[in-house]
Length: 256
Image 1 (cartoon, rainbow, N blue to C red):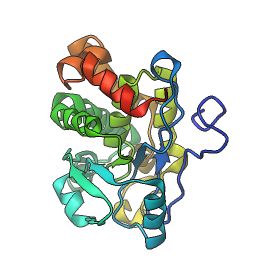
Image 2 (cartoon, rainbow, N blue to C red):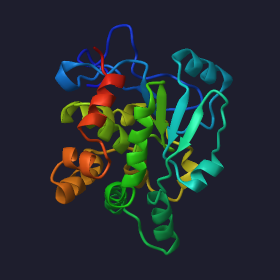
Image 3 (cartoon, rainbow, N blue to C red):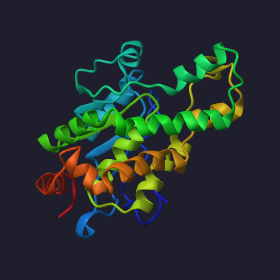
Image 4 (cartoon, rainbow, N blue to C red):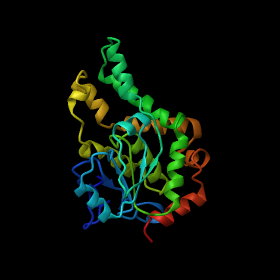
């Protein structure tokens, strides 16, 4: 899997252990275009960064991380704000819907089931394509500016961040199996918030909310394929990631 010998050099660790953030990991080592590997210590994905400690910040400074791409919605960003001087934060706003819709169903007296929640997740992933493509296009614009180490994140670092990672890895030529492996690593690395936040929900519903499933990512992929035939066409036509952009990304983030 993603931390196995296929993807990880002996002297690099994919997960980065931080006290104030979970699901923080390095995308280095995956095999991309022409057999070239993603460079280590360039691209990171994570849950939100509002609770980083001074030790965490020192660790990120040592890694050279100097910019962040924040996919959280306006309310999330205000509630869990961060303004770390060493991180140049770029807001790429994608509003969340799942928790709000789930809570609304409960407040109306509906019996929210795990299957209901899974379908809410599928709807959310479809919205990444149907509503928020421009934000992911902005992400690729940011990536092409330079190769200063960057972390991209949302709140849990699993859904909006997971789709962004899948798009980035696709653009860099990583195969579908490795992309799915990276996506599913969330189930090992994400630390859930206190149950009290969503205490009215059953454990099965909470699992559907806080874990990832292959069908979630495939809801985005299938939406792309239905509208654009392929991820490659979507990257080119909708996100502006044409051949020149891919060459630029490869130059910045793949090994020689």
